[in-house]
Length: 90
Image (cartoon, rainbow, N blue to C red; front, side):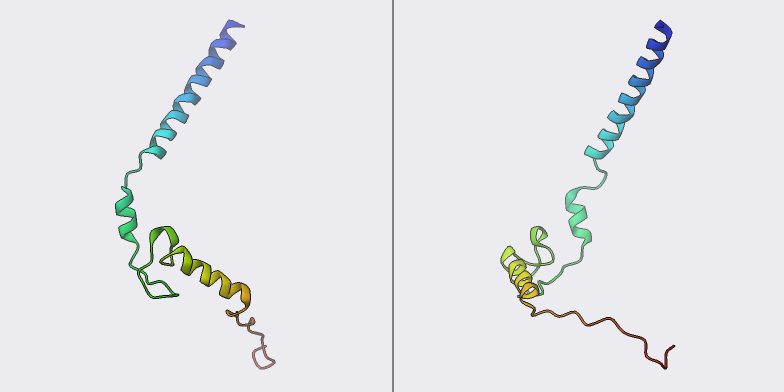
């Protein structure tokens, strides 16, 4: 019985070590946040044309984001219907 307890304790300690290692790699990324943001090319806001901001991407502000959402909800933006095959294509 003691041997089973020792084996269980060893398995638990190995599991804890693996979790600890995984957590350390997740909390300490190899790339800095500034390097990540510089990878993305500059993008202009589709509503007003100003530079897009990281917190509202691809828009420059929450105002432009709300304007875009309103256009979708009011029906200003319309998606084209899917292409249908004609008799000639079949």
